Image 1 (cartoon, helix red, strand yellow):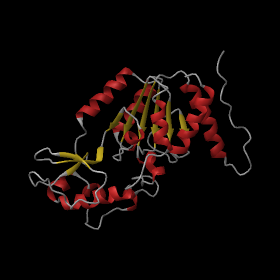
Image 2: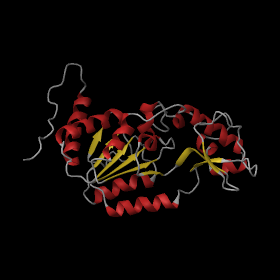
Image 3: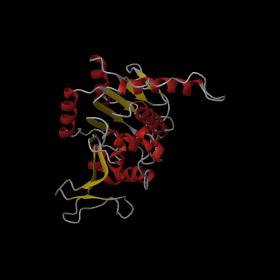
Image 4: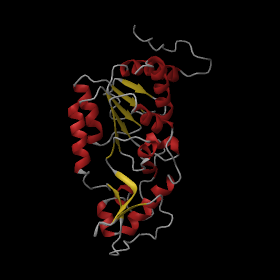
Amino acid sequence: MSPATPSSVEDGPRGVSQSLLEDSRVIDRIVQRMGGARRLLFITGAGMSADSGLPTYRGRDGIYRAQQATPHGPSIEQALSGSMFEERPEVTWHYLLELEKSGRGAGPNRGHRVLAEMEDYFESIWILTQNVDSLHQRAGSRNVLDIHGSLHDLICPECGRHRVVPDFEDLDLPPRCPDCRAIVRPRVVLFGEDLPYDKLARLWQELRDGFDLVFSIGTSSLFDYIVEPIRRARQRGIPTVEINPEMTTVTPLVDYKVRTGAAAALDQIWERYLAFWPWS
């Protein structure tokens, strides 16, 4: 006996916009495709953490778009670059502190928790995230490729001393290593720096092993390594989904587009999946 097919919303309550009804129909089709899936990849960006109170970067009202030049003169990308850290670490640390303060005290939202819950229902769930907030890990997800690192993971570039801090509140800026007095930094990829080889290698390995469904969530998809999994899936006929209120570079590539915010969309997808595939 086959499972019941998720029903599309044909006649919604008064006042419900057409876009919400369209999203509901798309979500039904996504849930149908999830029924036979074993391995899922989720690519997440700042929009994934927006419902936790963190600002987006380049999206609508994003902090990078809103601020073409910083009070120190250079753009935010220049201020948060590896070369600026080498030349003027106090400038880089000023904006690292701003980023950290913008998310201080935030916790995982429903979207993060949904992805963690999925691990008990599928053979493999992998998350490729651009976010440096570690909220996926805090929600309980195990297979997280935080390709840009973690803002709270501090390391001394001289002697390698390492520690994890809950926030930057008690740090003297720029902070110095207690052992060698060099200026420490978060273990994040600053603009102009190379991505971590080990995480890239693991991503390519998992892509070679294959996925049954690939999601892009809350990212403007401006970097090639973020777009590439979508391209590969499309070439292989693997269903692809974008959850993002805005149009992005991958919007023309995906099979399914959901314009609802990340947390609400994932909550709906998961609720309907559990209702229509209860024995998964």
